[in-house]
Image (cartoon, rainbow, N blue to C red; front, top):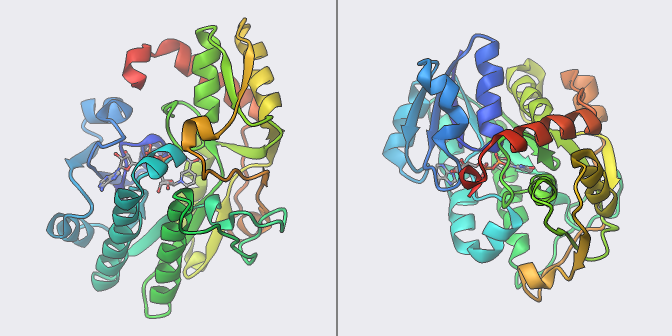
Length: 326
Ligand SMILES: NC(=O)c1ccc[n+]([C@@H]2O[C@H](COP(=O)([O-])OP(=O)(O)OC[C@H]3O[C@@H](n4cnc5c(N)ncnc54)[C@H](O)[C@@H]3O)[C@@H](O)[C@H]2O)c1
């Protein structure tokens, strides 16, 4: 199949490209390199395995041309990461909703299959644990910039589901805290990357709040495989799937685990989240996925344990010159 990956030079997108290539698909990437890097695609570019187009998904004529030549679009391009969104919520909304609207509308026009990548952020402050696809979204006020990310993703989901009732073959996947090689210490769910870099350099490992927040981390290769399965399944059209792992851990325990695995002498330093994100920041205590739907309908399950995934991540960060992470 001819696959278009928007945001394919980013963290998850570059792993998705690899998974698609392994299955023999043709891959084209559009990325504006605002956050991602061609370094993430180096081996595929050097071997002529993918086509790379540097461009903005808000440029409709370029997008139209690329979508018209594809069989399936994996839409990952977004302004990602609490920090990026809090710093520039307007750009986040333009890209994360405006860009998604263009991608979905053009896929509808050209009758193309599409997978829209949403986020566990849409569950917000919901207490319905574990989060299931049919559960409520509980979001905070519009004065708090972090919620603009969840709102723009949720609106994209509504559009995907709405257009699927009008003939668009769309599937939504909601990712839960991906980690692994090629993640950036300042990216989304990047706490693993940040702690790893701090531990390798024997710097204080900075934990927001008291570190009692619980997250379920998902190794990026698993996430990429789940995304491909969602796009290739005939029964997933018009549906939403959680794509994540069951590796639940407290953030403080994660800091200790990474420090031990790195054999680092880093102290663990608790800092108030508003020092990084400003006064209005609202943190989520517990976030984990109900994976029954993806397991039953997509035959998807994360295979990589937290220990194995952390080991691979640590090895990758040890091998990469830190200036390349900036
Ligand atoms: N990483 C996670 O844990 C996580 C969790 C939930 C959802 N997601 C979603 O998964 C997708 C991929 O996330 P990621 O972690 O790989 O982030 P990433 O920042 O590494 O990748 C996003 C890519 O989109 C590109 N991009 C941004 N704006 C663009 C534009 N206007 N036009 C073209 N390209 C543009 C960036 O340069 C980057 O390469 C995003 O849609 C994100 O919202 C990620």
